[in-house]
Image (cartoon, rainbow, N blue to C red; front, side):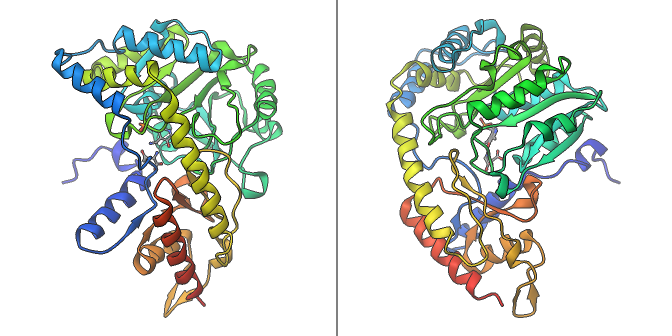
Amino acid sequence: MDFISKRVQNLATSATLAMSQKSAELRAAGIDVINLSVGEPDFNTPAHIKEAACRAIEENFTFYSPVPGYMSLRKAIADKLSRENGLEFDPTQIVVSNGAKQALCNVILTTVNPGDEVIIPTPAWVSYVEMVKLAEGTPVTVPAGIDADFKITPAQLEAAITTRTRMVLLCSPSNPTGSVYTREELQGLVDVLAAHPGVLILADEIYEHINYTGGFTSLGSFPQTADRTIIVNGVSKAYAMTGWRIGYCAAPAAIAKACTKLQGQYTSGASSIAQKAAEAAYTGSQECVAEMCAAFRRRRDLVVELASKIPGFKVNRPQGAFYLFPEVSALMGKRFGDKVIATSGDLALYLLEHAHVATVDGAAFCAPDYIRFSYATSDDKLAEAMARIDRAVRQLI
Ligand code: PMP
Ligand code: GLU
């Protein structure tokens, strides 16, 4: 007898986490796999943040925290949004969650009714479509390929909006493409949305600080639509804190209140100790953020140079995040022995088995002609991984 609900049966497994797990298993079996699948900084959490967590334990921040987070952390986040992004949120409009992932899911479950449409430009991070499905909403994907630098146009957005559109979800800098919308490009999208007052805007700004353009424009900073824009961000990427699980949404008061109600029924407040660490991240020196970004930028240059020499790989020059998303359709139909590479999934598997490099199939990001690799790892490992991929690809005929 199958006891699994239809809701979960219909849910896809997170391909990023699954591939990372597979690569960890191969490593445990003694195979020297280079894991470029999961996207997380390879740096340790900065010392002053770890010290704040140790202090929190000593000072007995070990009890349940308030469901939307400690007020001191919510104030620190409101200050950050004001200082760095020019956004004015009252701390009560901020809800702290277990990572940006839960913050996104809270917002979607809180605002999307069954049958509501959510516009998702693709390629898109693996979890957006699945979260919308959990809310019984209808994901409406709007594709933008490598030739468009993976960015949708105002005309595409306008064409996707219907009377059932509830929300548009935008991620910039983007996972998996690394593309960053300029202020002018965002203004173009906002101009379209200004004419549709019933549409919410959900801005996933988790890669804000891993940005090589020299400036960042928050989608919340456009007066025409600011009152219906929800910002999601967190400490995972900017402060190398993926395991601490702290993210947040900053939202119109009614939505923040509803997210708190939802979270109060299924996870409660996020870890008390991790919240104190996150507070130190936001209030302490920001030097570590710039240092890590400089390292990612150097690695971006390295992988773009090496990957563009691999036969059949078409690459762009990502402006942010730490992913490269080559178009690989030229390799489809090639063979290794009697094995045909028919899909980008076959290619990802081939690279894992023959090059011992873990990547993620583009299909998981609604872009089946691509594969993703994360370059958040050391220069040496990246150079070795690219050499291995190059060799393996040249063996295909
Ligand atoms: N949004 C995007 C685009 C991401 O890549 C990630 C990384 N997992 C998240 C949200 C979730 O981040 P967190 O680790 O804070 O849950
Ligand atoms: N966001 C990262 C990635 O895309 C972490 C894994 C996940 O949560 O999906 O690889």
